Structure formats: C-alpha cells, structure tokens
Amino acid sequence: MTESMDPYMRAAYEEALAGRSEGGIPIGAVLVRNGEIVGRGHNRRVQLGNPILLYKILEALTRSKREKNNFTLLLNECG
Image (cartoon, rainbow, N blue to C red; front, top):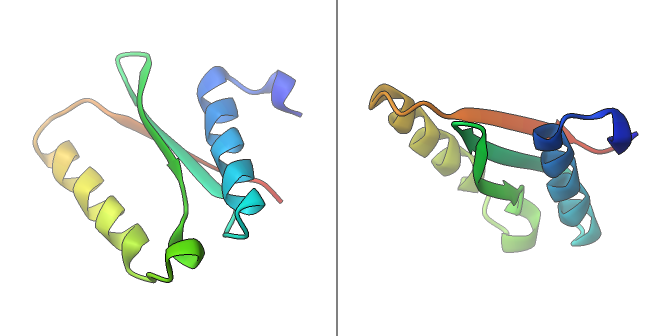
C-alpha cells in the first residue's frame, strides 16, 4: 500500500503506525514547507492521557497559517 503513496503521505502513514504500536489512536501527521518535512508526529492523546492535546496542536497550526507561513499539513490514518 505505501508504495503507491507520495512521500509525504507515506511519512504520515508511518507515524500512524507508530501511534498504533504504542497502543494509541493510529493517526499520523507531517508538516511540509517548501517540499521539505519540517515536522512530524502522531496522536498521543491515549498514551499521555490528555484529551486536549490534539486541539492545542491544531490551534498552533491555525495560528501559523494566519501569520502567512506556507505550510501544508498531511494527515493519515492506518486501520
């Protein structure tokens, strides 16, 4: 399956797999700027016991867009 993905979606998928292997929700993300991955991670809400964690991340990304930084966020879920 990953062979047909673009490299950014593949990286997000790999992060989702990492989250699942830790016992968490299998959602991964990468942050891309000018064709380069500048950030990556996976949902750790379950592992850290913090239901607000995802919203803090989304708020930070929303602020960066308001400041005219040219970022692309790619999310992927593995099932």
